[in-house]
Length: 640
Image (cartoon, rainbow, N blue to C red; front, side, top):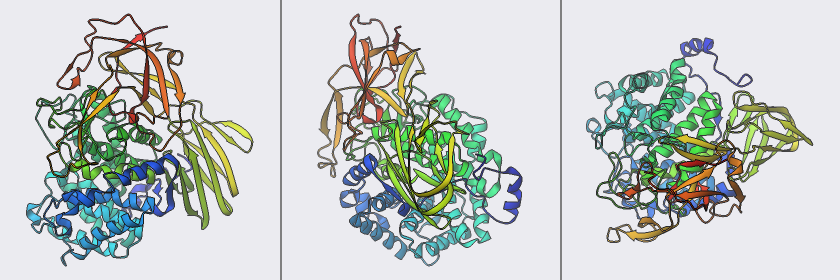
Protein backbone atom coordinates (compact mmCIF):
# COMPACT_ATOMS: atom_id res chain seq x y z
CA UNK A 1 0.00 0.00 0.00
CA UNK A 2 2.12 2.81 -1.35
CA UNK A 3 0.45 5.79 0.33
CA UNK A 4 0.18 4.21 3.74
CA UNK A 5 2.94 3.36 6.18
CA UNK A 6 4.10 0.34 4.16
CA UNK A 7 7.02 -1.66 5.48
CA UNK A 8 10.36 -0.16 4.46
CA UNK A 9 12.87 -2.91 5.18
CA UNK A 10 15.84 -0.56 4.76
CA UNK A 11 14.76 1.52 7.73
CA UNK A 12 14.34 -1.31 10.21
CA UNK A 13 17.86 -1.52 11.63
CA UNK A 14 17.84 2.17 12.47
CA UNK A 15 14.60 1.80 14.38
CA UNK A 16 15.92 -1.12 16.39
CA UNK A 17 19.19 0.61 17.22
CA UNK A 18 17.20 3.50 18.67
CA UNK A 19 15.28 1.09 20.91
CA UNK A 20 12.04 1.87 19.16
CA UNK A 21 9.32 -0.56 18.31
CA UNK A 22 8.44 -0.61 14.64
CA UNK A 23 5.03 0.82 13.92
CA UNK A 24 2.08 -1.27 12.78
CA UNK A 25 0.66 -0.05 9.49
CA UNK A 26 -2.79 0.48 11.02
CA UNK A 27 -3.73 1.40 14.58
CA UNK A 28 -6.98 0.11 16.10
CA UNK A 29 -9.40 2.71 17.36
CA UNK A 30 -10.27 2.81 21.03
CA UNK A 31 -13.45 1.32 22.44
CA UNK A 32 -14.81 4.82 23.03
CA UNK A 33 -14.46 5.72 19.35
CA UNK A 34 -16.65 2.91 17.95
CA UNK A 35 -20.40 2.47 18.21
CA UNK A 36 -21.99 -0.66 16.71
CA UNK A 37 -25.30 -0.22 14.91
CA UNK A 38 -27.91 -2.26 13.08
CA UNK A 39 -27.67 -6.02 13.17
CA UNK A 40 -24.22 -5.88 14.83
CA UNK A 41 -25.64 -3.93 17.77
CA UNK A 42 -28.48 -6.44 18.05
CA UNK A 43 -25.99 -9.31 18.00
CA UNK A 44 -24.01 -7.77 20.86
CA UNK A 45 -27.25 -7.30 22.81
CA UNK A 46 -28.12 -10.97 22.24
CA UNK A 47 -24.69 -11.89 23.56
CA UNK A 48 -25.12 -9.70 26.63
CA UNK A 49 -28.47 -11.33 27.39
CA UNK A 50 -26.94 -14.79 27.00
CA UNK A 51 -23.99 -16.57 28.59
CA UNK A 52 -21.49 -13.72 28.22
CA UNK A 53 -23.54 -11.25 30.21
CA UNK A 54 -24.60 -13.68 32.93
CA UNK A 55 -21.79 -16.12 33.73
CA UNK A 56 -20.74 -14.11 36.78
CA UNK A 57 -24.23 -14.57 38.23
CA UNK A 58 -24.26 -18.37 38.35
CA UNK A 59 -21.13 -20.10 36.96
CA UNK A 60 -18.76 -20.92 39.84
CA UNK A 61 -15.60 -20.44 37.77
CA UNK A 62 -16.50 -16.75 37.45
CA UNK A 63 -18.82 -16.11 40.39
CA UNK A 64 -16.59 -17.91 42.90
CA UNK A 65 -13.24 -17.62 41.16
CA UNK A 66 -10.00 -17.70 43.14
CA UNK A 67 -9.21 -14.41 41.41
CA UNK A 68 -11.74 -12.78 43.76
CA UNK A 69 -11.02 -14.88 46.83
CA UNK A 70 -13.32 -17.80 46.05
CA UNK A 71 -12.68 -21.51 45.78
CA UNK A 72 -13.37 -22.22 42.10
CA UNK A 73 -10.95 -22.20 39.17
CA UNK A 74 -8.27 -19.52 39.52
CA UNK A 75 -6.31 -19.73 36.31
CA UNK A 76 -7.48 -18.83 32.78
CA UNK A 77 -11.27 -18.75 32.97
CA UNK A 78 -11.92 -15.43 34.68
CA UNK A 79 -9.36 -13.58 32.49
CA UNK A 80 -10.82 -15.25 29.39
CA UNK A 81 -14.30 -14.05 30.32
CA UNK A 82 -13.16 -10.51 31.12
CA UNK A 83 -11.34 -10.39 27.78
CA UNK A 84 -14.72 -10.38 26.04
CA UNK A 85 -17.00 -9.06 28.76
CA UNK A 86 -15.12 -5.75 29.09
CA UNK A 87 -15.38 -4.66 25.44
CA UNK A 88 -18.95 -5.96 25.31
CA UNK A 89 -19.94 -3.83 28.32
CA UNK A 90 -18.35 -0.65 26.98
CA UNK A 91 -19.52 -1.10 23.39
CA UNK A 92 -23.07 -1.41 24.72
CA UNK A 93 -22.46 1.35 27.29
CA UNK A 94 -24.21 -0.88 29.82
CA UNK A 95 -23.66 0.62 33.28
CA UNK A 96 -24.53 -2.56 35.15
CA UNK A 97 -22.08 -4.62 33.11
CA UNK A 98 -19.42 -1.93 33.52
CA UNK A 99 -19.80 -1.94 37.29
CA UNK A 100 -19.51 -5.72 37.40
CA UNK A 101 -16.33 -5.63 35.32
CA UNK A 102 -14.89 -2.93 37.58
CA UNK A 103 -15.55 -5.10 40.63
CA UNK A 104 -13.35 -7.89 39.26
CA UNK A 105 -10.61 -5.56 38.02
CA UNK A 106 -10.52 -3.63 41.30
CA UNK A 107 -10.22 -6.83 43.31
CA UNK A 108 -7.36 -8.10 41.14
CA UNK A 109 -5.49 -4.80 41.32
CA UNK A 110 -6.04 -4.43 45.06
CA UNK A 111 -4.62 -7.91 45.66
CA UNK A 112 -1.49 -7.59 43.56
CA UNK A 113 1.49 -8.40 45.77
CA UNK A 114 4.11 -5.77 46.48
CA UNK A 115 6.67 -7.74 44.49
CA UNK A 116 4.37 -7.60 41.43
CA UNK A 117 2.87 -11.09 41.37
CA UNK A 118 -0.77 -10.67 40.35
CA UNK A 119 -2.27 -14.17 40.02
CA UNK A 120 -4.11 -15.98 42.84
CA UNK A 121 -1.55 -18.79 43.12
CA UNK A 122 1.63 -17.80 44.98
CA UNK A 123 3.65 -20.76 43.74
CA UNK A 124 5.35 -19.14 40.76
CA UNK A 125 7.67 -22.09 40.20
CA UNK A 126 4.76 -24.53 40.06
CA UNK A 127 2.41 -22.47 37.95
CA UNK A 128 2.08 -22.24 34.21
CA UNK A 129 2.35 -18.52 33.38
CA UNK A 130 -0.31 -18.52 30.68
CA UNK A 131 -2.90 -16.94 33.00
CA UNK A 132 -0.33 -14.29 33.99
CA UNK A 133 0.07 -13.29 30.33
CA UNK A 134 -3.68 -13.35 29.85
CA UNK A 135 -4.62 -11.09 32.76
CA UNK A 136 -2.11 -8.47 31.62
CA UNK A 137 -3.78 -8.43 28.19
CA UNK A 138 -7.11 -7.93 29.94
CA UNK A 139 -5.74 -4.96 31.89
CA UNK A 140 -4.62 -3.31 28.64
CA UNK A 141 -8.14 -3.73 27.28
CA UNK A 142 -9.60 -2.31 30.49
CA UNK A 143 -7.35 0.73 30.21
CA UNK A 144 -8.55 1.27 26.65
CA UNK A 145 -12.12 1.33 27.94
CA UNK A 146 -11.59 3.40 31.09
CA UNK A 147 -8.18 5.14 30.95
CA UNK A 148 -7.71 3.94 34.54
CA UNK A 149 -4.41 5.51 35.65
CA UNK A 150 -3.55 2.54 37.87
CA UNK A 151 -3.11 0.12 34.98
CA UNK A 152 0.29 1.31 33.79
CA UNK A 153 1.83 0.84 37.24
CA UNK A 154 0.16 -2.53 37.77
CA UNK A 155 1.44 -3.93 34.47
CA UNK A 156 4.92 -2.47 34.99
CA UNK A 157 5.18 -4.02 38.45
CA UNK A 158 3.97 -7.39 37.17
CA UNK A 159 6.42 -7.43 34.27
CA UNK A 160 9.30 -6.44 36.56
CA UNK A 161 8.42 -9.46 38.70
CA UNK A 162 8.50 -11.62 35.61
CA UNK A 163 11.85 -10.15 34.58
CA UNK A 164 13.38 -10.92 37.98
CA UNK A 165 12.22 -14.53 37.98
CA UNK A 166 12.25 -15.77 34.41
CA UNK A 167 16.02 -16.31 34.32
CA UNK A 168 15.76 -19.15 36.83
CA UNK A 169 12.29 -20.42 35.97
CA UNK A 170 11.83 -20.96 32.26
CA UNK A 171 8.50 -21.06 30.48
CA UNK A 172 6.69 -24.37 30.16
CA UNK A 173 3.28 -25.75 29.29
CA UNK A 174 0.76 -23.32 27.84
CA UNK A 175 2.98 -20.29 28.46
CA UNK A 176 5.76 -21.96 26.48
CA UNK A 177 3.38 -22.41 23.53
CA UNK A 178 1.72 -18.98 23.88
CA UNK A 179 4.68 -16.79 24.89
CA UNK A 180 3.90 -14.18 22.21
CA UNK A 181 0.66 -13.18 23.95
CA UNK A 182 2.79 -11.41 26.54
CA UNK A 183 4.14 -9.13 23.77
CA UNK A 184 0.77 -7.39 23.70
CA UNK A 185 0.98 -5.86 27.21
CA UNK A 186 4.75 -5.42 26.86
CA UNK A 187 4.48 -3.39 23.66
CA UNK A 188 1.64 -1.36 25.19
CA UNK A 189 3.79 -0.54 28.22
CA UNK A 190 6.93 0.15 26.21
CA UNK A 191 5.15 2.68 24.00
CA UNK A 192 4.16 4.55 27.15
CA UNK A 193 7.37 4.53 29.23
CA UNK A 194 10.21 3.58 26.79
CA UNK A 195 12.21 1.57 29.33
CA UNK A 196 14.80 -0.68 27.70
CA UNK A 197 14.38 -3.58 30.15
CA UNK A 198 11.00 -4.31 28.53
CA UNK A 199 12.67 -5.13 25.21
CA UNK A 200 15.24 -7.24 27.05
CA UNK A 201 12.46 -9.15 28.80
CA UNK A 202 10.76 -9.69 25.45
CA UNK A 203 13.98 -11.19 24.10
CA UNK A 204 14.13 -13.61 27.05
CA UNK A 205 10.52 -14.67 26.59
CA UNK A 206 11.05 -15.20 22.88
CA UNK A 207 14.16 -17.29 23.55
CA UNK A 208 12.30 -19.48 26.03
CA UNK A 209 9.12 -19.84 23.97
CA UNK A 210 8.31 -22.48 21.39
CA UNK A 211 9.75 -21.78 17.92
CA UNK A 212 6.65 -21.91 15.74
CA UNK A 213 8.41 -20.59 12.64
CA UNK A 214 10.88 -23.47 12.67
CA UNK A 215 8.06 -25.98 13.12
CA UNK A 216 6.29 -24.64 10.05
CA UNK A 217 9.49 -24.77 7.98
CA UNK A 218 9.46 -28.54 8.44
CA UNK A 219 5.72 -29.09 8.81
CA UNK A 220 5.02 -32.50 10.39
CA UNK A 221 1.20 -32.35 10.46
CA UNK A 222 0.20 -33.02 6.87
CA UNK A 223 -2.38 -35.53 8.05
CA UNK A 224 -4.40 -35.92 11.24
CA UNK A 225 -2.45 -37.36 14.12
CA UNK A 226 -3.59 -40.71 15.43
CA UNK A 227 -6.62 -40.65 17.70
CA UNK A 228 -6.09 -39.77 21.35
CA UNK A 229 -2.58 -38.46 20.68
CA UNK A 230 -2.56 -34.93 22.09
CA UNK A 231 0.25 -32.37 21.82
CA UNK A 232 0.85 -28.65 22.32
CA UNK A 233 2.29 -28.40 18.79
CA UNK A 234 -0.79 -29.78 17.03
CA UNK A 235 -3.28 -28.17 19.43
CA UNK A 236 -5.81 -26.26 17.37
CA UNK A 237 -6.03 -23.22 19.66
CA UNK A 238 -2.27 -22.86 19.94
CA UNK A 239 -2.04 -22.90 16.15
CA UNK A 240 -4.77 -20.27 15.85
CA UNK A 241 -3.04 -18.05 18.40
CA UNK A 242 0.50 -18.38 17.07
CA UNK A 243 -0.35 -16.88 13.67
CA UNK A 244 0.25 -13.42 15.12
CA UNK A 245 3.51 -14.37 16.85
CA UNK A 246 5.85 -13.47 14.00
CA UNK A 247 4.33 -10.05 13.21
CA UNK A 248 4.22 -9.17 16.92
CA UNK A 249 7.89 -10.06 17.28
CA UNK A 250 8.76 -8.22 14.05
CA UNK A 251 7.99 -4.97 15.82
CA UNK A 252 11.15 -5.53 17.90
CA UNK A 253 13.42 -7.43 15.52
CA UNK A 254 12.56 -6.10 12.08
CA UNK A 255 12.79 -9.62 10.65
CA UNK A 256 10.99 -9.87 7.32
CA UNK A 257 10.65 -13.62 7.86
CA UNK A 258 8.73 -13.00 11.09
CA UNK A 259 6.57 -10.30 9.52
CA UNK A 260 5.48 -12.58 6.69
CA UNK A 261 5.42 -15.86 8.62
CA UNK A 262 1.63 -16.10 8.87
CA UNK A 263 1.29 -16.27 5.08
CA UNK A 264 3.12 -19.61 4.88
CA UNK A 265 1.51 -20.91 8.06
CA UNK A 266 -2.04 -20.26 6.87
CA UNK A 267 -1.24 -21.79 3.48
CA UNK A 268 -0.20 -25.03 5.20
CA UNK A 269 -3.15 -25.06 7.58
CA UNK A 270 -5.56 -24.47 4.68
CA UNK A 271 -3.94 -27.12 2.51
CA UNK A 272 -4.04 -29.91 5.06
CA UNK A 273 -6.76 -28.95 7.56
CA UNK A 274 -8.72 -26.03 6.05
CA UNK A 275 -12.50 -25.72 5.92
CA UNK A 276 -14.69 -23.70 3.59
CA UNK A 277 -15.70 -21.52 6.56
CA UNK A 278 -12.19 -20.06 6.81
CA UNK A 279 -11.10 -22.01 9.88
CA UNK A 280 -9.10 -25.22 10.16
CA UNK A 281 -10.12 -28.35 12.02
CA UNK A 282 -8.92 -29.36 15.45
CA UNK A 283 -10.87 -31.51 17.88
CA UNK A 284 -8.71 -30.93 19.87
CA UNK A 285 -5.65 -31.36 17.71
CA UNK A 286 -5.35 -30.80 13.96
CA UNK A 287 -7.82 -33.16 12.33
CA UNK A 288 -7.58 -32.99 8.52
CA UNK A 289 -10.10 -31.86 5.91
CA UNK A 290 -13.00 -34.23 6.55
CA UNK A 291 -16.30 -32.32 6.91
CA UNK A 292 -17.22 -34.33 10.00
CA UNK A 293 -14.17 -33.37 12.05
CA UNK A 294 -14.64 -30.55 14.51
CA UNK A 295 -13.20 -27.11 15.13
CA UNK A 296 -13.04 -25.91 18.71
CA UNK A 297 -14.82 -22.66 19.60
CA UNK A 298 -11.68 -21.28 21.28
CA UNK A 299 -9.84 -21.73 17.99
CA UNK A 300 -12.51 -19.75 16.15
CA UNK A 301 -12.29 -16.69 18.39
CA UNK A 302 -8.50 -16.87 18.74
CA UNK A 303 -8.06 -17.14 14.97
CA UNK A 304 -10.18 -14.00 14.67
CA UNK A 305 -8.05 -12.23 17.27
CA UNK A 306 -4.86 -13.21 15.44
CA UNK A 307 -6.30 -11.89 12.18
CA UNK A 308 -7.15 -8.59 13.85
CA UNK A 309 -3.48 -8.21 14.75
CA UNK A 310 -2.36 -9.31 11.29
CA UNK A 311 -4.55 -6.65 9.66
CA UNK A 312 -3.12 -3.98 11.95
CA UNK A 313 0.56 -4.92 11.65
CA UNK A 314 0.87 -6.09 8.05
CA UNK A 315 -1.93 -4.21 6.17
CA UNK A 316 -2.66 -7.28 3.99
CA UNK A 317 -6.26 -6.96 2.81
CA UNK A 318 -6.82 -10.70 2.48
CA UNK A 319 -6.63 -11.01 6.27
CA UNK A 320 -9.78 -8.88 6.38
CA UNK A 321 -11.44 -11.23 3.91
CA UNK A 322 -10.54 -14.17 6.13
CA UNK A 323 -11.73 -12.43 9.28
CA UNK A 324 -15.13 -11.77 7.73
CA UNK A 325 -15.38 -15.35 6.46
CA UNK A 326 -14.86 -16.71 9.98
CA UNK A 327 -16.97 -14.07 11.76
CA UNK A 328 -19.96 -14.49 9.46
CA UNK A 329 -19.90 -18.29 9.24
CA UNK A 330 -17.97 -20.27 11.86
CA UNK A 331 -18.52 -17.87 14.77
CA UNK A 332 -22.34 -17.68 14.89
CA UNK A 333 -22.75 -21.34 13.93
CA UNK A 334 -21.15 -22.57 17.14
CA UNK A 335 -23.82 -20.91 19.34
CA UNK A 336 -27.53 -21.39 19.72
CA UNK A 337 -29.24 -18.31 18.25
CA UNK A 338 -29.90 -16.85 21.72
CA UNK A 339 -26.23 -17.40 22.71
CA UNK A 340 -27.26 -19.16 25.92
CA UNK A 341 -25.59 -22.39 24.78
CA UNK A 342 -22.57 -23.23 22.67
CA UNK A 343 -20.66 -26.16 21.26
CA UNK A 344 -17.11 -27.11 22.04
CA UNK A 345 -16.66 -28.43 18.48
CA UNK A 346 -18.62 -27.50 15.37
CA UNK A 347 -18.70 -29.59 12.19
CA UNK A 348 -19.14 -28.44 8.60
CA UNK A 349 -21.42 -31.42 7.96
CA UNK A 350 -23.36 -31.61 11.22
CA UNK A 351 -26.48 -33.74 11.03
CA UNK A 352 -26.82 -34.44 14.76
CA UNK A 353 -25.44 -33.16 18.05
CA UNK A 354 -25.58 -35.97 20.57
CA UNK A 355 -23.59 -37.75 23.25
CA UNK A 356 -21.50 -40.58 21.86
CA UNK A 357 -19.44 -43.32 23.48
CA UNK A 358 -17.16 -43.48 20.45
CA UNK A 359 -17.05 -39.93 19.05
CA UNK A 360 -15.49 -39.04 15.73
CA UNK A 361 -13.27 -36.43 17.36
CA UNK A 362 -9.51 -36.96 17.59
CA UNK A 363 -9.02 -36.28 21.31
CA UNK A 364 -12.22 -34.60 22.49
CA UNK A 365 -14.99 -36.34 24.38
CA UNK A 366 -18.44 -37.59 23.51
CA UNK A 367 -20.30 -34.38 24.40
CA UNK A 368 -18.13 -32.06 22.34
CA UNK A 369 -20.74 -31.09 19.74
CA UNK A 370 -23.81 -30.84 21.97
CA UNK A 371 -25.10 -27.36 22.77
CA UNK A 372 -24.68 -26.53 26.44
CA UNK A 373 -23.08 -24.61 29.26
CA UNK A 374 -19.63 -26.20 29.19
CA UNK A 375 -19.64 -29.21 26.87
CA UNK A 376 -16.41 -31.21 27.01
CA UNK A 377 -14.43 -28.53 28.88
CA UNK A 378 -15.12 -25.07 30.26
CA UNK A 379 -12.42 -23.03 28.51
CA UNK A 380 -14.75 -22.17 25.61
CA UNK A 381 -17.49 -21.12 28.01
CA UNK A 382 -15.18 -18.41 29.29
CA UNK A 383 -13.42 -17.57 26.03
CA UNK A 384 -16.45 -17.36 23.73
CA UNK A 385 -17.16 -13.77 24.77
CA UNK A 386 -14.34 -12.10 22.82
CA UNK A 387 -15.47 -13.00 19.29
CA UNK A 388 -18.12 -10.42 18.40
CA UNK A 389 -16.87 -7.49 20.55
CA UNK A 390 -13.31 -7.61 19.22
CA UNK A 391 -14.63 -7.98 15.69
CA UNK A 392 -16.66 -4.80 16.22
CA UNK A 393 -13.52 -3.05 17.46
CA UNK A 394 -11.73 -3.99 14.23
CA UNK A 395 -14.21 -2.50 11.77
CA UNK A 396 -12.21 0.72 11.35
CA UNK A 397 -8.55 1.48 12.04
CA UNK A 398 -6.27 4.47 11.59
CA UNK A 399 -3.54 4.77 8.98
CA UNK A 400 -0.84 7.41 8.97
CA UNK A 401 -2.88 9.41 6.46
CA UNK A 402 -6.44 8.77 7.58
CA UNK A 403 -8.80 5.86 8.19
CA UNK A 404 -9.17 2.27 7.02
CA UNK A 405 -12.39 0.31 6.65
CA UNK A 406 -10.85 -3.03 7.61
CA UNK A 407 -13.95 -5.22 7.89
CA UNK A 408 -17.54 -4.34 7.13
CA UNK A 409 -20.44 -4.26 9.58
CA UNK A 410 -22.93 -1.53 10.56
CA UNK A 411 -21.32 0.96 12.93
CA UNK A 412 -20.28 4.56 13.44
CA UNK A 413 -16.97 5.97 14.59
CA UNK A 414 -16.01 9.29 16.12
CA UNK A 415 -12.33 10.18 16.16
CA UNK A 416 -9.82 12.95 15.49
CA UNK A 417 -7.63 13.37 12.43
CA UNK A 418 -5.11 16.22 12.50
CA UNK A 419 -6.97 17.78 15.44
CA UNK A 420 -10.23 17.73 13.51
CA UNK A 421 -13.28 15.83 14.72
CA UNK A 422 -14.30 13.23 12.15
CA UNK A 423 -17.19 10.80 12.18
CA UNK A 424 -17.96 7.98 9.78
CA UNK A 425 -21.25 6.14 9.78
CA UNK A 426 -21.72 2.90 7.88
CA UNK A 427 -25.32 1.83 7.34
CA UNK A 428 -25.45 -1.63 5.84
CA UNK A 429 -27.01 -5.07 6.01
CA UNK A 430 -23.78 -6.63 4.75
CA UNK A 431 -22.91 -9.55 4.69
CA UNK A 432 -26.52 -10.37 3.77
CA UNK A 433 -26.61 -7.57 1.18
CA UNK A 434 -24.02 -6.08 -1.16
CA UNK A 435 -24.58 -2.39 -0.46
CA UNK A 436 -22.68 -0.23 2.05
CA UNK A 437 -23.78 3.37 2.66
CA UNK A 438 -21.16 5.67 4.19
CA UNK A 439 -21.55 9.16 5.62
CA UNK A 440 -18.40 11.10 6.54
CA UNK A 441 -18.80 14.23 8.66
CA UNK A 442 -16.07 16.70 9.62
CA UNK A 443 -16.31 19.78 11.83
CA UNK A 444 -14.11 21.69 9.38
CA UNK A 445 -12.50 21.05 6.03
CA UNK A 446 -9.70 18.52 6.30
CA UNK A 447 -7.88 16.29 3.85
CA UNK A 448 -7.34 12.62 4.60
CA UNK A 449 -7.57 9.19 3.01
CA UNK A 450 -10.33 6.67 3.61
CA UNK A 451 -8.97 3.27 2.60
CA UNK A 452 -11.73 0.85 1.61
CA UNK A 453 -10.97 -2.87 1.65
CA UNK A 454 -12.16 -4.54 -1.54
CA UNK A 455 -12.81 -8.26 -1.00
CA UNK A 456 -10.99 -10.61 -3.32
CA UNK A 457 -14.20 -12.52 -4.05
CA UNK A 458 -15.68 -9.64 -6.09
CA UNK A 459 -14.41 -8.36 -9.41
CA UNK A 460 -17.13 -5.79 -10.03
CA UNK A 461 -16.94 -3.43 -7.04
CA UNK A 462 -18.02 0.14 -7.71
CA UNK A 463 -18.52 3.42 -5.89
CA UNK A 464 -21.36 5.95 -6.15
CA UNK A 465 -20.22 9.43 -5.07
CA UNK A 466 -20.91 13.01 -6.14
CA UNK A 467 -23.56 11.77 -8.55
CA UNK A 468 -21.13 9.52 -10.39
CA UNK A 469 -20.57 5.78 -10.54
CA UNK A 470 -16.91 4.78 -10.43
CA UNK A 471 -15.60 1.31 -11.16
CA UNK A 472 -13.03 0.42 -8.52
CA UNK A 473 -9.53 -0.72 -9.30
CA UNK A 474 -8.13 -1.95 -6.00
CA UNK A 475 -4.43 -1.74 -5.21
CA UNK A 476 -3.29 -4.61 -2.99
CA UNK A 477 -6.87 -5.11 -1.90
CA UNK A 478 -7.68 -1.49 -1.01
CA UNK A 479 -9.19 1.49 -2.77
CA UNK A 480 -8.03 4.89 -1.55
CA UNK A 481 -10.66 7.61 -1.40
CA UNK A 482 -8.55 10.69 -0.70
CA UNK A 483 -10.13 14.12 -0.77
CA UNK A 484 -10.78 17.27 1.18
CA UNK A 485 -13.72 16.39 3.36
CA UNK A 486 -16.02 19.19 4.47
CA UNK A 487 -19.33 19.02 6.29
CA UNK A 488 -21.24 15.87 5.39
CA UNK A 489 -20.34 13.60 2.48
CA UNK A 490 -22.26 10.46 1.60
CA UNK A 491 -21.31 7.70 -0.80
CA UNK A 492 -22.27 4.11 -1.55
CA UNK A 493 -19.97 1.14 -2.04
CA UNK A 494 -21.29 -1.98 -3.76
CA UNK A 495 -19.83 -5.46 -3.87
CA UNK A 496 -21.82 -7.60 -6.34
CA UNK A 497 -21.71 -11.09 -4.88
CA UNK A 498 -20.62 -13.94 -7.10
CA UNK A 499 -21.74 -17.56 -6.63
CA UNK A 500 -18.81 -19.91 -6.24
CA UNK A 501 -18.90 -23.70 -6.22
CA UNK A 502 -15.83 -24.63 -4.18
CA UNK A 503 -14.33 -28.09 -4.72
CA UNK A 504 -13.67 -30.06 -1.55
CA UNK A 505 -12.01 -33.46 -0.99
CA UNK A 506 -13.72 -36.70 -2.04
CA UNK A 507 -15.70 -35.12 -4.89
CA UNK A 508 -17.74 -32.94 -2.58
CA UNK A 509 -18.52 -29.26 -3.12
CA UNK A 510 -19.59 -26.23 -1.10
CA UNK A 511 -21.68 -23.24 -2.21
CA UNK A 512 -20.44 -19.75 -1.35
CA UNK A 513 -21.64 -16.29 -2.33
CA UNK A 514 -19.71 -13.25 -1.22
CA UNK A 515 -18.45 -13.80 2.34
CA UNK A 516 -21.18 -16.33 3.17
CA UNK A 517 -21.14 -20.11 2.95
CA UNK A 518 -24.50 -21.78 2.29
CA UNK A 519 -25.69 -25.03 3.86
CA UNK A 520 -28.68 -27.30 3.54
CA UNK A 521 -31.21 -26.32 6.18
CA UNK A 522 -32.10 -29.36 8.30
CA UNK A 523 -35.17 -29.43 10.51
CA UNK A 524 -34.23 -29.97 14.13
CA UNK A 525 -35.51 -31.25 17.46
CA UNK A 526 -33.85 -30.06 20.67
CA UNK A 527 -33.80 -32.52 23.59
CA UNK A 528 -32.74 -31.34 27.03
CA UNK A 529 -30.12 -33.51 28.77
CA UNK A 530 -27.97 -33.46 31.92
CA UNK A 531 -30.86 -32.01 33.93
CA UNK A 532 -29.44 -33.42 37.16
CA UNK A 533 -26.10 -31.58 36.83
CA UNK A 534 -25.92 -28.36 38.89
CA UNK A 535 -25.84 -25.22 36.78
CA UNK A 536 -27.87 -26.72 33.92
CA UNK A 537 -31.07 -24.90 34.83
CA UNK A 538 -32.91 -22.96 32.09
CA UNK A 539 -31.87 -21.07 30.07
CA UNK A 540 -28.28 -22.36 30.35
CA UNK A 541 -29.15 -26.03 29.79
CA UNK A 542 -27.48 -28.81 27.84
CA UNK A 543 -29.17 -30.06 24.67
CA UNK A 544 -28.85 -32.75 22.08
CA UNK A 545 -30.14 -31.76 18.63
CA UNK A 546 -31.61 -34.30 16.22
CA UNK A 547 -32.63 -34.00 12.55
CA UNK A 548 -36.32 -34.22 11.65
CA UNK A 549 -35.92 -33.72 7.89
CA UNK A 550 -33.73 -35.58 5.37
CA UNK A 551 -30.13 -34.51 4.93
CA UNK A 552 -28.72 -37.06 2.45
CA UNK A 553 -28.72 -35.13 -0.82
CA UNK A 554 -26.60 -34.26 -3.81
CA UNK A 555 -27.18 -30.92 -5.53
CA UNK A 556 -28.17 -30.43 -9.18
CA UNK A 557 -26.01 -27.51 -10.28
CA UNK A 558 -24.42 -26.36 -13.51
CA UNK A 559 -20.92 -25.88 -12.08
CA UNK A 560 -19.84 -23.58 -14.92
CA UNK A 561 -22.95 -21.40 -14.62
CA UNK A 562 -24.25 -21.86 -11.07
CA UNK A 563 -26.45 -18.76 -11.29
CA UNK A 564 -28.68 -20.76 -13.65
CA UNK A 565 -29.22 -23.40 -10.98
CA UNK A 566 -29.43 -21.43 -7.73
CA UNK A 567 -32.01 -18.76 -6.95
CA UNK A 568 -31.34 -16.39 -4.05
CA UNK A 569 -34.17 -14.77 -2.14
CA UNK A 570 -33.79 -11.91 0.33
CA UNK A 571 -35.72 -11.59 3.58
CA UNK A 572 -35.79 -8.98 6.30
CA UNK A 573 -32.68 -8.66 8.45
CA UNK A 574 -34.46 -9.05 11.76
CA UNK A 575 -33.47 -8.97 15.41
CA UNK A 576 -31.81 -12.41 15.27
CA UNK A 577 -30.40 -12.90 11.77
CA UNK A 578 -28.09 -15.77 12.72
CA UNK A 579 -30.87 -18.30 13.22
CA UNK A 580 -32.62 -20.84 10.98
CA UNK A 581 -35.90 -18.94 11.16
CA UNK A 582 -34.32 -15.50 10.77
CA UNK A 583 -31.99 -16.14 7.83
CA UNK A 584 -31.94 -12.87 5.86
CA UNK A 585 -31.11 -14.60 2.58
CA UNK A 586 -31.93 -18.10 1.36
CA UNK A 587 -31.01 -20.04 -1.75
CA UNK A 588 -33.16 -22.53 -3.60
CA UNK A 589 -31.65 -25.35 -5.63
CA UNK A 590 -32.78 -28.75 -6.81
CA UNK A 591 -31.23 -31.91 -5.44
CA UNK A 592 -31.58 -35.67 -5.33
CA UNK A 593 -31.57 -38.03 -2.38
CA UNK A 594 -28.54 -40.30 -2.32
CA UNK A 595 -27.19 -43.21 -0.35
CA UNK A 596 -25.30 -41.60 2.54
CA UNK A 597 -25.03 -43.46 5.83
CA UNK A 598 -24.35 -42.21 9.33
CA UNK A 599 -22.44 -43.74 12.22
CA UNK A 600 -22.06 -42.66 15.85
CA UNK A 601 -24.20 -39.58 15.30
CA UNK A 602 -22.36 -38.25 12.24
CA UNK A 603 -22.67 -38.62 8.50
CA UNK A 604 -19.90 -40.64 6.93
CA UNK A 605 -17.14 -38.41 5.50
CA UNK A 606 -18.52 -38.93 1.99
CA UNK A 607 -21.49 -40.81 0.51
CA UNK A 608 -21.39 -44.36 -0.80
CA UNK A 609 -23.57 -43.35 -3.80
CA UNK A 610 -24.89 -46.92 -4.17
CA UNK A 611 -28.21 -45.43 -5.19
CA UNK A 612 -29.39 -42.04 -6.43
CA UNK A 613 -33.02 -41.02 -6.52
CA UNK A 614 -34.56 -40.26 -9.91
CA UNK A 615 -36.72 -37.58 -8.31
CA UNK A 616 -35.56 -33.99 -7.99
CA UNK A 617 -36.56 -32.05 -4.88
CA UNK A 618 -36.44 -28.31 -4.31
CA UNK A 619 -34.01 -27.70 -1.45
CA UNK A 620 -33.43 -24.68 0.74
CA UNK A 621 -29.93 -23.48 1.59
CA UNK A 622 -29.32 -20.84 4.25
CA UNK A 623 -26.15 -19.11 5.46
CA UNK A 624 -23.91 -21.46 7.44
CA UNK A 625 -23.93 -19.05 10.39
CA UNK A 626 -27.73 -19.36 10.59
CA UNK A 627 -27.68 -23.13 11.03
CA UNK A 628 -27.60 -25.47 14.00
CA UNK A 629 -27.74 -28.66 11.92
CA UNK A 630 -26.44 -28.56 8.37
CA UNK A 631 -24.93 -30.24 5.35
CA UNK A 632 -22.36 -27.99 3.71
CA UNK A 633 -20.15 -30.28 1.63
CA UNK A 634 -22.22 -32.36 -0.78
CA UNK A 635 -21.78 -34.08 -4.14
CA UNK A 636 -22.96 -32.25 -7.25
CA UNK A 637 -24.74 -33.62 -10.30
CA UNK A 638 -23.36 -31.30 -12.96
CA UNK A 639 -26.46 -30.47 -14.98
CA UNK A 640 -26.22 -28.07 -17.91
